[in-house]
Image (cartoon, rainbow, N blue to C red; front, side, top):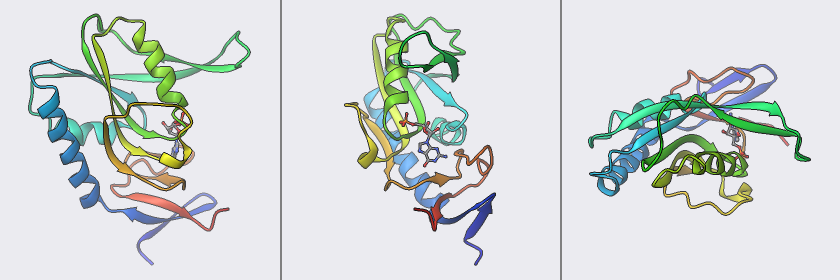
Length: 181
Ligand code: 5GP
């Protein structure tokens, strides 16, 4: 079978081929071109997982815009929540800007919520969310995700920027784990 891959202990099968991904990325790009024209949006790509989505999306954005890259760094918080994440890598002044967060996948939504809170303190005019994938069944928080390329079931996936233990980000298609409880 050439549509399966093995990464460490897990086997994955192609679930979304590149052509399907690119069709949906194209659609999201046209929605953004339509909605955010004249706003000079600043796209904030959340590394590492969204690098491939960001590249394919940005190639299809035809309105004047800027793109920058951020990371979420875990650090031991003093709050009762324990591990919290800090947004690093923002060198731009976000005051009055139209921001588009570019994410790979929204699962529970907690990461996105944290990002919105953090970016919100920098006084942007508006923040929009663009994500390659959403797992609607896992979503725990109420988020207004305007730009979604694809909605997927609650299974673990790799490829097209997403990894399993650091591996698999380079695959052009999206793969879903098989034989997993
Ligand atoms: P959330 O905070 O929404 O629960 O989690 C979002 C993060 O979890 C994503 O940015 C991604 O790093 C990771 N994640 C969630 N589901 C998957 C998945 O199916 N595959 C991979 N590779 N990462 C995932």
